[in-house]
Image (tube, rainbow, N blue to C red; front, top):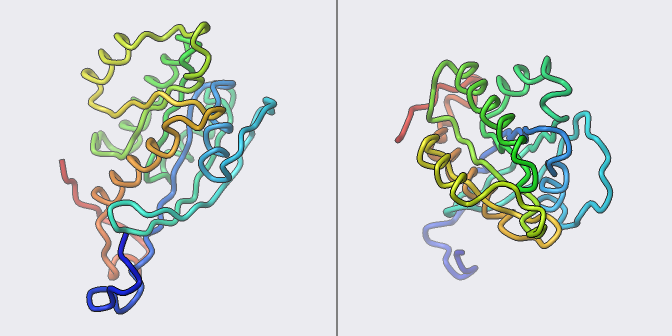
Length: 202
C-alpha cells in the first residue's frame, strides 16, 4: 500500500483494470455463498438455487486496482447450454466443489476440460479451484491427499474455504486476479479497439 505522502511516482491514479470472472460448479456446492461472502462480506444462511447473478467488486492486488464483474452461475449440470457462453466471455474462472461431496469434483474436472476446449487449448487461462464448507469437518469427503494429487495433475491452485467462517475466500479471488493481471497485460490501444490479444506468460 502506498502512503498518501508518496506523490512522485503516483501523480495520477493508476489505470483501473476490468476483468470478468465466472463462478462455475455443480448445484448446491456453495458458489453463491462464496461469491456473496467475497463481494458483500455476509454469509447466506439459506440455499436458494441461482439462475444467474452478477456482482461487482474493486480490489487491489500487487499494486494493481482491478474491477471484477463476477458472474455467479447456476449449477453446471442444470444449465449446460449456457456454459459455453459463460466460458467464452469470461477471463478468469472459479471452479467450485464441496469438500463434503466428492462427486462434485467430477463436475469441476468436466468444466476444466470444457474451458480449455472453448479457449482453444490455452492452458494459461486463469483458473482457481475452490473447495467449500471447510468448517463441516465431520462431513468432509474429499481428502487432502486427493486434492494434492489433483494439484499435481492439473497444475492449478486449490483453496479450501469456508464462506460461513470467511476462511481463505479472499485468498482464492486474489490469486485469480494476480493470474489475470499477468495473463492479460494492460494495453490502452487494445482497449480502444475493444478486443484483446493477450500474450501468454508461464
